Each structure stands twice: as structure tokens, then as C-alpha cells.
Amino acid sequence: MSLARIHRPSRRVLPLLLLLAVAACSKDEPAAPSATPAQPAATAPAATPPAPAVSAEVQAMNVDQLRESATNALRENRIYAPGGNNAMEYYLALRDKLPNDAGVASALTDLMPYTLIAAEQSIAREEFAEAQRLSTLIEKADPNAPALPRLKQSIATAQQAVAQRAVTDEAKTQAEQETRVKEQQRLAQQAEQQKAAEAVAAQQLAQQEAARVEAERQAAAQREREAANRPATPAGNTASAPAAARPTAAAQPLRAVSTPAPRYPPDALRSGTSGEVLVELTVGTDGSVTAARVVRATPARVFDREALNAVRRWKFEPVDAPITTRRTIGFNPG
Image (cartoon, rainbow, N blue to C red; front, top):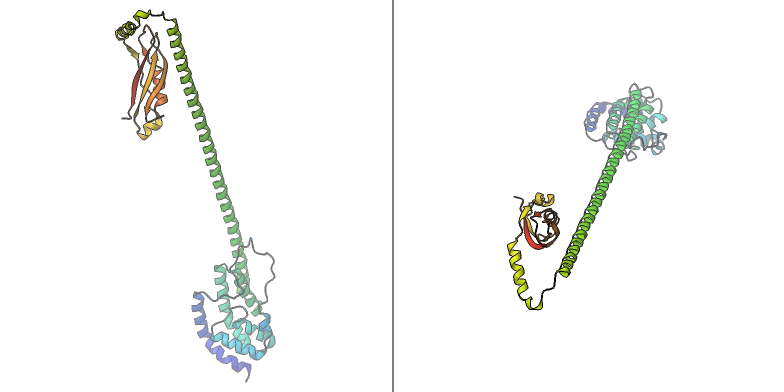
């Protein structure tokens, strides 16, 4: 049986196969096992020699094996894939062994459009290894194919676009990372500043407390000095002395001249916290407050400082002797 007769039926079914192939090309054509998804050109080797169009296994087959394999490949619609087991490679190997066989040449001419469509689809999917393999098949089938230069240019252009996109994505990722680092540094610096401010506030509070304790100590010492300098009361009058002192205190009560209200702590005002502070204060003979201390506060350590600051600014009418008394200062955000 001649080769021409073998390929004549295939020639008649090729239009039908073309319709089937076009339908199959609209779906995902089975990729060659050796073809892998394209990597960005920035990471792929730049000068990898192209693989041969026809695999060594196919080249090693004899003419009868190639005919049978080509027929089976057409029947199963394996026109150009997978690599090493498709009709294009079988016919190319047959042409190498039978260069003057018109049937083989006609079959290759009929299969070229399918391979070209598949190559263009591989480029669109950025599967450049598969596109290059199909381009190699087309070039071996017809080095002067009109679509071949455009196909090669499309592969190169698409690879350059992917490489440029990879560079752009890398720059974008790096910029985002730098932004995150700067934000972390800003937050860390803000936390350090807040910590330093809290330390300063704590130091100021400690200094104020120390000043309060010192003022109380000085007031107590003053009272002791005044008591030591006070004339001694005869023994027979010890019982009547307190009675005499009481009318004096009652006869000269404290009269306020100026009692400015305390400042409401901002944190307590924002949170709507209310409370009161019981303050013990000593009024000197000139009517100024010489000492003040917190006896009780509700809630604790929220309004103490502002209550003491306000009391120390109070003024009373002058008195004959220092008087110690207690006042309750209320705080109400309403």
C-alpha cells in the first residue's frame, strides 16, 4: 500500500478535524508534559537553547510506526500536543524520512493553522515555553511561513511585558514594605514619647507630693515652736484653759475671702467621672493657706492634685493664730 493512499483518507477528514480542533482550542488544549507555566522573564534564563521540534523518541521511530502514530494522533485530536506525542511531530519525522512524499507535505500544511492558533493562545496565557515549542514546530514545518515572524515577535513582546510587570510589582512591593517599616518606626517613636511624657508626669507628681509633705512638716514644726513659746498655764488653771480657748476660736471663725474652684482634670472630665476630696488645711495668721493635705478622696488619686492646688490658693481674713480645719471639695462634670 502506498503512502499517498494512506494519507488520502486523512486528507478528506481534515476539514472535519479542523472544526473539532477549533472547538477544542476554545477550551484548554492539553499542555505538553514538558511545558510549564511561563515564569517572569526577569527570573527565567535569558539564553536557553530551544528544544528540537521533534523529540528524539519520535525521530527514532520507523516509517510504519510514524504512519500509525500520526493516524492515531489525528483520530484522538492530538494535533500539536502533548510534546513528543502529536500529529505534527510524527508528520515532521515522516517528512525527514520521506522528503518527497506529497501526502506528508499536504498533511503538515493542513495542520499548520491549528498549531498557529494554539501558539497564539499559549502567548495569551503567558505559557511561553509552550508557545516557543509550537513556534519551533511551525518553523520546522515551514521556515518561510508568513505568520512565523509575527508569532516570534509576539512571544518576545509578551515576555518583555511580563518581565516589566514583574519589575513593577517588585517595586510596588518594596514601596509597600518601606511604608510599613516607616509606620512601625513612627508608632514606636510615638510610644517612646508617650512613655517619656508619663515619666515626666510621674516625676512632677512625686515632687508635688514631696513638697506637700515638707509643707506639712514645716507647719507642724511651726506649731511646735509656737506651743513652746506660749506662756505656761498655772497648774490650777489647766482645767479651765481649754474652756477659755474655745470661746476665742468660736469668736473668731474663718471667713473666706477668695476660694477659687479647682480645675477639673481633663481625663476625668472626658470620662464623666465625679467625686470628692476631703482636705485638711492650715490657715496662717495672714489668712493664707500654709499647709494642706488630702485626708480622703473618692475615687483615689483622681482629683487629689487639683484639690490641693485650689486649696493652696484660698485666702481668708487674717486670724490671731493659725487654724487647722477640713473642707470637702466636690467634683461633678455636670
